Image (cartoon, rainbow, N blue to C red; front, side, top):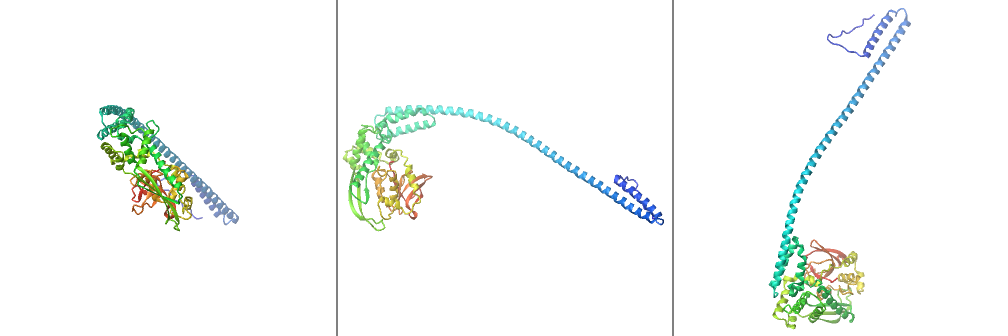
Length: 507
C-alpha cells in the first residue's frame, strides 16, 4: 500500500474552513480507507475491487457537485447584496441633494423678499418726492399762465393802431401763453381762444390767416376758394362741351391764390382796419369772387394738328384754352391802393408768411384714400389699352396721364372738377396751376396728390403718377406707363431732382 502524504499546518496561523471544505476532507478519508481495503482484498476477490472503484467515483462526483452548488449560491448572495447597497446609496445621495436644493431656494426667496421690501420702501419715498415736485410745477405753470394772460390782455387794451411790430408782439405773447398751456396751465385755454378771435388780430390784415376756421357763419375761406375753383372748372368744361375736339391743352399764367387773397385782404381792411377779415359772410364771398374774375380771363382756340404721340401720327382736333391774369401791381393800381394798402399786400406776400397760406387755401384735406386704392388695384396692367381706349384713342398712346384720369373718373372726380381729364402731362400741370392747386418740388405731398416728373430736368414735364404715401422722407407712387409699359409701384427720395411738382386736388 502506498503512503499518503499530509501537509503540516504552519505555526501561528489558523485556518477557517467552511462546511464544504470539511466535507471534502471527510470524503478524502473515506477514499483512503476504501482504497486501503480494496488493495488488501484485491488479490482475493476481483469483484470486490470493481465495486470499490465505482463507489469511489460516485462519492467523489457527489461531493464535487455539492461544493459547486454551495459556491454558486454564496456568489449570487454577495452580488445581490452589493446591488442593494448601491441602490440604497444612490437613494441617499438623491435625498441629500434634494434637501440641499430646497434649502438654497428658501434662502434665495428670503433674499428676494428682503430686496422687494427695500425696493418698495425706496419707490414709495421717490413717488412721494415726485408728487410734491409735480404739484409745485403745476402751481408755477398755473401762476405763469395767469400772469401771461393778464399781460397779453393789458397789451391788447393799450394798443390803438395795429402795426406789424405790435402784431409780432401779440404773437410772441401768445407763444408764451401756449408754452404755459403745455406746462399745465390749461385753465387759460378759453382765454386764448377769446383773445385770438375777438382781440385786435381780428381787425388786422393778419386775421386772414385765421379765416380757414368757421366763426359761426358756416363758411370758411378755403370753402370759398373751392367754390371759385369750381366756377373756373365749369367755365373750362363749358368751352370743351361747346367746341368738338379730340384733345385739349390748357395754357395758363394765372395768379397764385395768395396773391388774390392779399389783394382781397387789403381791399377789405382798407389800410385803416375798416373791417375784420377773419369772418367770411355772403358779402365778403361776393367781394372775393369779383376780385378773382377782375384778375383773370379765359380764352380759347380750336386747331387741327397731328398728335405725334400716337403710333400712326393721327390728325386730331386740339382745343387750346388759355387763362391769363393781371399782376399784383396791376390790381393795386386798378383799385387805387393807398401806400398803406400796398405795404399790407407786400407784407402778406413776404416769405415770412409763405407756410401760413396753405391752410387758408387748401384747408385740412387729408386727400382721397379711395383714389389710392383704385390706383393700387391696377398695378400690373401691361399696355394700358383699358385706359387709352376709354379716353378715346384707337391706337396706343403714352398713357401715364390717361391712367391718372381713368382712376379719377372711377370716383366721379372729373365730373366734379376735382381732377382734369388729360392725356398730356403739361395739360395736367397747367390745369392745377389754373386752379391755384399747384405746389413746386419743395412741397411735402400727401396721399392722393398728383406727382409730375421732369426726367431730363430741362423744365419740360415728362411723366405723372399718384402719390400712395410718404414715409421716412420717401415718396411712394403708383404710375401708369412705367417700366416695360406697365402700371407699377415706384419710390423716390423726397427731394429727388426729377420731381417737377405736385397737383393738390381739393378733395
